[in-house]
Image (cartoon, rainbow, N blue to C red; front, side, top):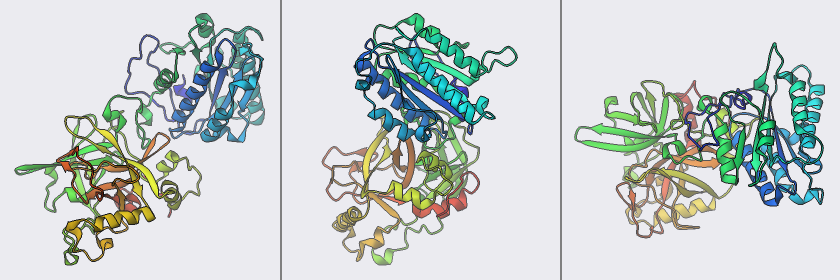
Length: 530
């Protein structure tokens, strides 16, 4: 199955029904296993330009989805009508680079086939056969260890070039598939996607792989249904420990934000709620100010996305966190080093609603940022994530009875950060502070305000949650929500009145706290050099 071709044995924990055209299947992904993905798009007259564009956009979505995992397949893309045109060949240098493949696909147009608008499906499959032959010549020793996936998008109405099934059979034979002593069916999957309203069902079925309890033929009408089909081809159970992933198509908030935890501190006569993020199976990242110095471990429970309540084994607060440290400077509460880590009593088991977040300067986040070279350093992550003065980010809010939702904000850096400090200086309760830099040190990232647009403020209950940057369907935590200059909330609910112009939120930068995080979470993350 396609599962067998992927790198980490990806297995879907949520077997959602998509209607009668969809059934559950597995796509095994094994890290380090080589894989080829061939995408063949019908540009014939019978398919038409509109459906060709659907095929193009769907292919891009599929490539983005696959490349969001910690795997590195080799891509080939062929467009076919009367003739087959190779947009990306398996032997091309950029065939391993998803972004470069998508760029070449984007640049290719329906018009490039000119008036040659027949349907020569066999020519496209012959191009696949040729590429495989060349790959075999270059690496005979490893060739049969490569898993192959073909995505064929067509209406099935070939009218020239001969029967495409002949070429499918030739590919199977070349890959030694179907032999009596070792059938090797896991090394080839042919998925066929019917384009348009008028498709040849018999021909689609004839070309697709046939495996027990799996579906390899789809009838799809638009990009969104294509997107849903692709996503349900991937079975993600064994990829749950890849950081910063989610089920982006899901309607379940816990699957959209599976790295979020709710931390409940129940003291005699009162309960406090904070948020946290899952770092690893043993550790939760949150804010130090959520806890009192004399809190007992028995007071603290961590609620995961699937509803489980976990006990805490150890509580680590940054040793330099001291809320009273700057009273002599008229700072009522000091939030420097406002970071804490909870160690779980039992290991967290991952699922579609319970997954780890990425943090920068780790090997796993290098995969997420597509910086896979051995020379990548922490500075490369920081330069990449913080390359603009205004960086789009988000935090996750929850206003009962509404479910969790993402709140878009911008991190202000450089000159934009100075405007954050100036806004804080204007707030009445900070008027006695001689130097606002004593209150807002370099440890803090700043969001909020009304420029360049009005941003939602953080509220009670958001503390300790992650400030996140999304990059190509991966989520990297760059901050921990710490404090706000103005409360524009009633409890956890944002007020409907206009956000004050000088409202700002401050988040402890993960980059500033990495040495301490590494000291606590030693074994489960691989850290990059500075």
